[in-house]
Image (cartoon, rainbow, N blue to C red; front, side):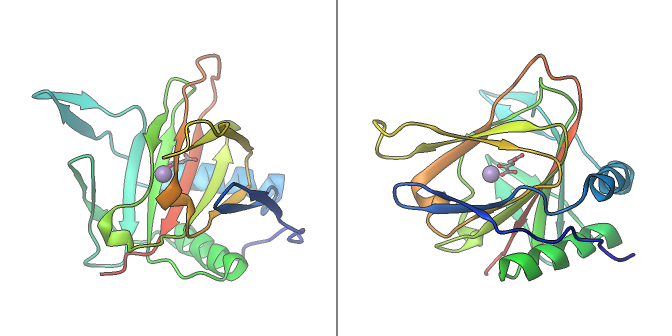
Length: 204
Ligand SMILES: O=C(O)CCC(=O)C(=O)O
Ligand SMILES: [Mn+2]
């Protein structure tokens, strides 16, 4: 299957105080985006994980899957994700993202937001296995969702708010994870699902 890339237009650069984010708002055409959404919905072995808070197991508000080269593990918030091998369409998307971004990746955390009640809370992707200056590339398919960033140590800085639309690619450069937190807040009126793939490089 050949990725029918839209002519990749000039990226939009979001210059934050001490970090930059590069956005390709329409990396894939609407048709390609729909095809990938359907493929990824069925081909990825989505799983409901739970985390233990105060002794209680709480389901996280989204489905997930950790896809990576063999031997690569990932743990966050005490949650160890079981590795799954690369399905062909995800490998195809990885190749595209590597070509466009100029960065290499060996793993992807896939998230499935069933509707606007699903979310991811404030965090940064700065686990030790990602090395000191991780670059994270984020591909979105399906419902448009709000992506927010806030600075870790300068609370007076305004929050940055981006709208991640279907077919967009966001490349978070090497100081974003060190200096900023990000989240996808709940938007309870939203009824449609969204898939997000965050490509990462495990550096051990
Ligand atoms: O869904 C998104 O846009 C972000 C997901 C995310 O931050 C993560 O998986 O670490
Ligand atoms: Mn993240």
